[in-house]
Length: 168
Image (cartoon, rainbow, N blue to C red; front, side, top):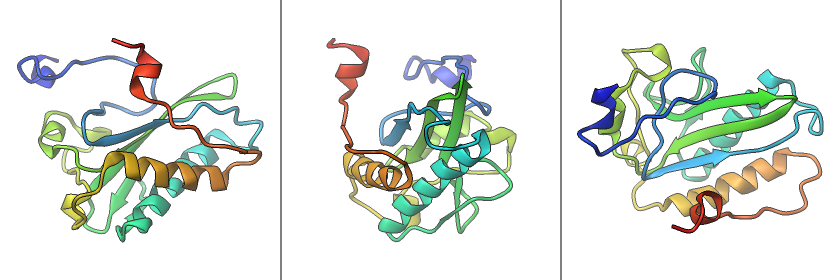
């Protein structure tokens, strides 16, 4: 675990999120949806596919090809992972969601084995030829994409980090 901390530059936390080791940090769109799957007629597998499809649609907005494979997450045409998907369910209510690498520093991924697949590498928007895009902008595109795919969504709200973790 000490190699994950990068000499104090990062922290390591265990969670109940599905999947194996992942990274969340600066330059990454982290979107955790809280939904009741029954309200939206999703099975757990259909929900994961919905998240992946929403990421793929958001990537397409920027001209980036994304796809699903036999491995979890969203992958690009060059076989690199651009988004992680991990969910936790309790009584049909979801937690966690996606981590989409917008302008994430890719060296962080050299410290983990994504999806238990040591031969796989990560990528970000710049690695796919798209530069200068802010995480916040991608977040708005992703939120609109998600809203289109859900039943009974009448509004989208953007929540600032300080509102979630408290004013510090």
